[in-house]
Length: 132
Image (cartoon, rainbow, N blue to C red; front, side):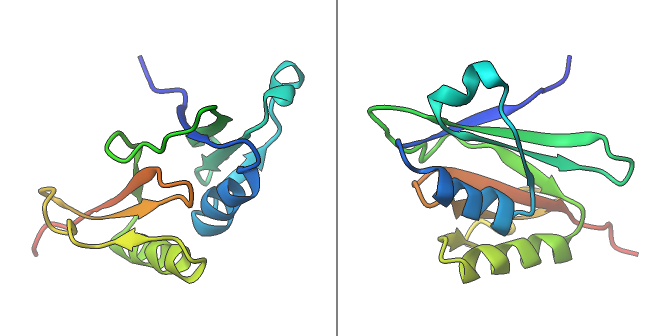
């Protein structure tokens, strides 16, 4: 078994804010939704590894009434602490809330929490290298 995708929600008309977070802030590629699902709104995003394999897929769906996921969240692993810090800086520069208060509370990882502009929490982690 493996995870295919994670879905988070946005209010109707929230797709541009989702694009700013997932595409511009986290560097994921927006992919076209299947034709049968386009009328529902929302947007889909993917990350790829160096060989072109999909490593992460996030679907942003429209939900009415909308309520942000403040506790439940996807957790995405970045390649390095430097990539984690750069993502946090990009998101903050785009105006998204970034919280570093839990940076050292997950053993073996550095982390931060970001909020996607609709109030959904997203965790970003990077493995810490063992001491040499």
